[in-house]
Length: 294
Image 1 (cartoon, helix red, strand yellow):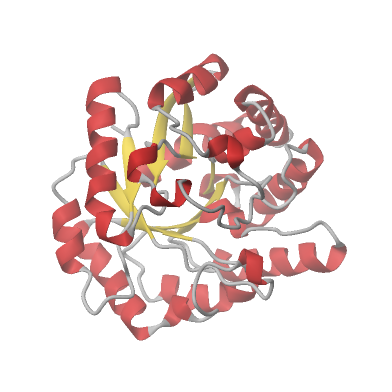
Image 2 (image 1 turned 135 degrees about the vertical axis):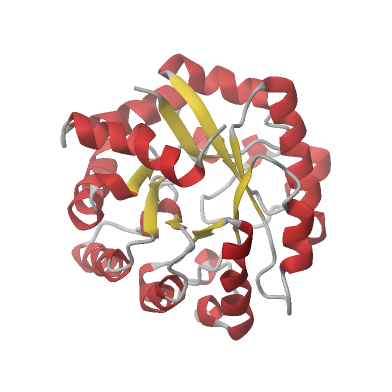
């Protein structure tokens, strides 16, 4: 079985303004160890002993005007190193017309989709979008509709309270593949929070053109906890089915608190509880179908 990491990042500090200057609060906590280059060679040293065969790079919030620079940089890394095998870039879906940006990105053969983070939470430190309903802003909706003309997917990052609006966006675009980042971002393990998260997944499960990425599961606890990973896998498989789920490491973010080997072992153990087919879906089949890695 091929193993595909559908969500990882590499970066070069000189091209990442947010890595220099004052520390900007992030939902994954203090990140001093990541205020440096994370080159592809280090990523491969982290992941390949676990048997990974392919990887999909997901954008890392470069300055918005540098959206093409990021894809160009990662494309050059792929030419030189043979990794990654697909790219999810950034395009600003809040502008009047995103097509000039998409035209510039479309020339890169590894581009498979775009992500613009639309998540908003009542806890200020968890917010990224300016408001909870940006996901259904008329400009955002108009620009997402344009993705089908380019054959691009959209990585959708939302909290559970936004899932009903998310279903509106996904449902209006049946020809576009949507990938729910971090499997809906479960923020805590108390019963109320877990049930709200499951309810959000059930809402989005109504859209057949949505898959979810089992990535960033340690984001809010800042550790690699096999029990938490198992909880998320069990619920996600029950609600969405393994054929709509894929593994993503979110490296190097999760490297703040764990090794790739330990992270992968926890994910694999959680998947294997559901059998060989579910494991193949999560670690290979879904990512292959959705991102079409080269």
